[in-house]
Image (cartoon, rainbow, N blue to C red):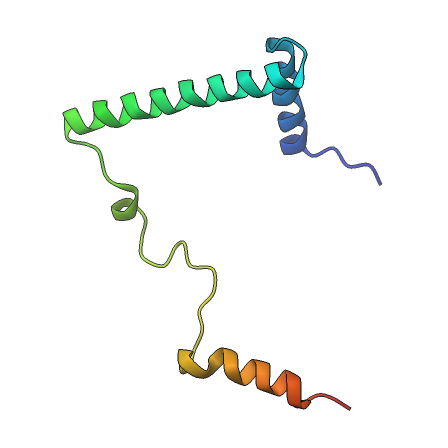
Length: 97
């Protein structure tokens, strides 16, 4: 099944645009992508400076609620967690027949 994903299409379009704006070589494409990245960094830095001057800038760590970036939560004694898992795998833990 051939499904058109709009995000993938946007990525392909961005790559085509960058290639067209470069000189048609991989070195030119790489150089152009780096220039675009530097321009983006400069815009972000200018925006942060503007917000700091206006007193509205909030550091990312203060703006994100606690726990939003967590990927996994482990329960129990962390010092033995990995050791128990590895030992049961080596010694034929529960579930092996």
